[in-house]
Amino acid sequence: MKSIIDIVDLSVAEIEELIAVAQELIVNPGQYAHACAGKKLATLFFEPSTRTRLSFEAAMYELGGQVLSVSSADSSSAAKGESVADTARVISCYADIIAMRHPKEGAALVAAQHATVPVINAGDGGHCHPTQTLADLLTIMREKGTFNGLTVGLCGDLKFGRTVHSLITALSRYSGVKFVLISPEELKLPSYVKRDVLKKNGIEYEQTENLEEALPALDILYMTRVQRERFFNEEDYLRLKDHYVLSVEKLKNAKPDLAVLHPLPRVNEISVAVDSDPRACYFKQVLNGKYMRMALILKLLKEAGTL
Image (cartoon, rainbow, N blue to C red):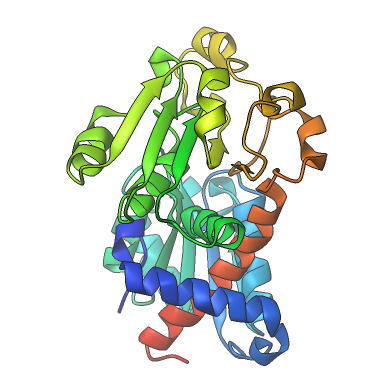
């Protein structure tokens, strides 16, 4: 039985298969309207979420399935001290598949080791967020038609940004990809990601603090917010939170076919005026996330032998 904890749990061929199914879902949604009839998805969210939780739930409903939801730790037995392992065992008795978000790195892996149904990591602390990466990949494919030969700028919180770590890992499998890492010194990409992913795979990258200088060369700009919940020091957060703000003025120097992505929620790092620019893809990204989660649910339930 397969669970998805990290994007590397999916091969390149499997990702391409998921993209193909997602594109089929976009064109022929009615064909899949009853694909998961009688199946239940449990969404266990021990950390706040709007898009990811509702995206998983919408995905299951649109496949004809049902949803059992825990939307905060306070509303579950975790508040009584129940372990992640025991929670996973218990929920496996009620649901056919689990989507789990947890503030602690590794919690989803523990859940997968003890559950008797597939587990999808919906974000574990600052570690990774594989289904957001699937949304990102579908968006890039629909906008660019390829993953090869792209120059990808990643801007903002590259230290704690689990979406950034997962996307770098996924795109590093393709040829000719170059990364431009745009962040203040305090929020630079962790050295282990540079060592274990970029350098190990011979991926070209550069680091800079200057967004305006980096923009003209980019095919993709992946903006991120500075995450208040990852900081131990409020002063550091306040000092860094508005370090980068993408504006219409700054976009004048960017390529006309640049794709601007953001995992959301947005705070101040993209001006609302950018929303009407045809290069703004972050709301498309949200919709693409639903289709990729639908494709992933179908794949895991089939592999578990329950579809």
